[in-house]
Image (cartoon, rainbow, N blue to C red):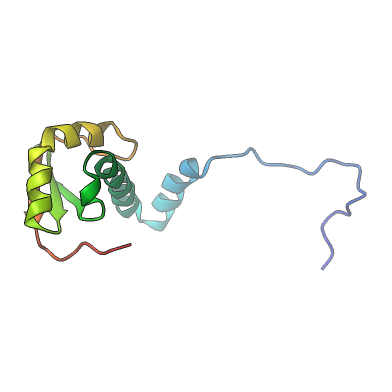
Length: 121
């Protein structure tokens, strides 16, 4: 298959403006009808970053699952020990999570332990 223009063609190729992938994802998600899934995927990544920086032993052992009522973030924890650690550090974690790109601002943290939904990467 021959290219649209030969490599010797003196004309400059036409270029579209360069856009970051982060700018394209929301538009693509909207078109595909998966805006909410993208939002939670970004929130999950932001949560993982916060946990990695503040509770390294709990990396991969918790995930945000929903926001209830008036600003209560519900997080699933793999074990009671992880749940207790998250609860103890809730103020610090919520503040950092709300400030992180993709994070969610919440006033309270509710931890649900042992739902079996957390999977290893």
